[in-house]
Image 1: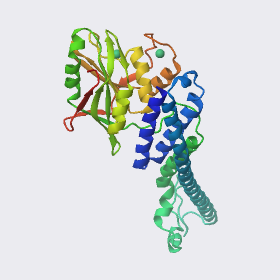
Image 2: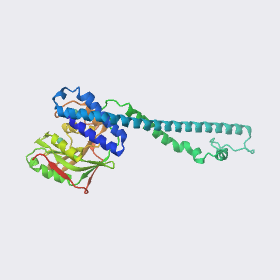
Image 3: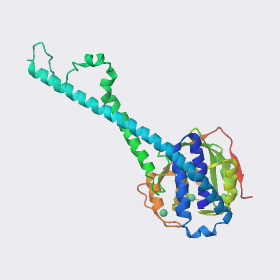
Image 4: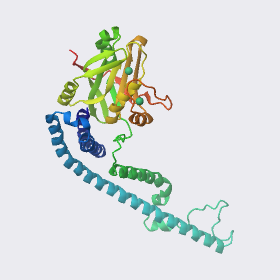
Length: 357
Ligand SMILES: [Zn+2]
Ligand SMILES: [Zn+2]
């Protein structure tokens, strides 16, 4: 299982790298390296994995470490530039504040020296006065915009500040597997043929009160995940379970067509559409790899369909819950929600690869 998700991780990292999302690419490469160096080599089952698979993984590890190091160098330069820019802005703000204070002190002094009503300036009751020396400043070649800067510039600086700290967090990477490459999810587009097509492929099982499950696969383009393939693995369905077999066939197929795993779909032949505790744990491993991953549930008997994703709380909770089989989770705060980043589209064909036959 580790080896399969490793392949998915690398596929994703290379796409990020190609798209210029270097932070995300670096993060995934790092996660892959950590997974192999720390988790797999120490995993009790790692000796059972075939020599070829391990050899393949070690080989790719050797090619990835230099790439990750290169990315790190690029990112460090970028962060350093960001940081210097941030320092410069801070310096400007400080100077400006100082200038303002001096100006105010100057005005105060003048107001004290000249009696109100004379040739001097009137100081309004609220203490505000137009800067008398602004013309002089303009003559000194400093633009008026600059004088206006504190109100308009402050939000920008705040944003840079938070950006800067998030970069620092990334560099101080820890082994927290729940960290995401990016906190904002991308749009996922599903072909509208998906539900009717899947229902007809599942019909025989549904009539026999057996679940059917499938994998939603597709491509990332212009920061949008478009589902193109429905993959049905070899499986054994029960009334409330679906066990898959020989998943390597699926992974090989995905490698061949360069398909990302965007989520999964399954039927509830007699129940309503929701995610059971087992479904939630299954889905957390999808969403760990791809924060935008979705779970589709089709409940033909109730004519319901749900498209779900885990909440941030859900991700944290499920990663920490080690119970197996059906068990109860607290219902509040919610562990999952209707996915709002998903849309159905008439455009684009849907390919089906059915490995059950
Ligand atoms: Zn289910
Ligand atoms: Zn649990």
